[in-house]
Length: 140
Image (tube, rainbow, N blue to C red; front, side):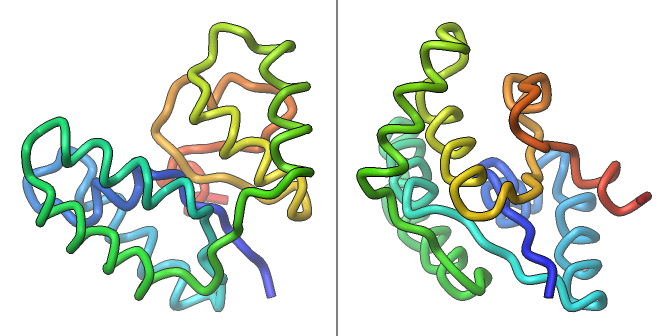
């Protein structure tokens, strides 16, 4: 069964009806369900959601969103020593890409070079990580 790695922004957008990308992310979820595609992410996703919601002073919303992630994913990868070692290698190759994005990329590479779904322009431009927007993935 195919696995698809969701970046944090996908979870933020599909849990917010006011988001510009709400409809696209809802279609992505439905597509994954209809095509038996397992949704995976990293424990880093939960940390990013809580961090984001703390910044906008909506911690309860972050907890709700995090619980939605837990209910949605088929698997949540942990960050271990191997992930950190690859992350440190990647950050040397891509020193201007945000640290959290490199950590997601390392997780994808170490867990079978997974396809990543994201709206993050930094990740979309990295050659070592197969990243694409939801609408591009659905079209293929």
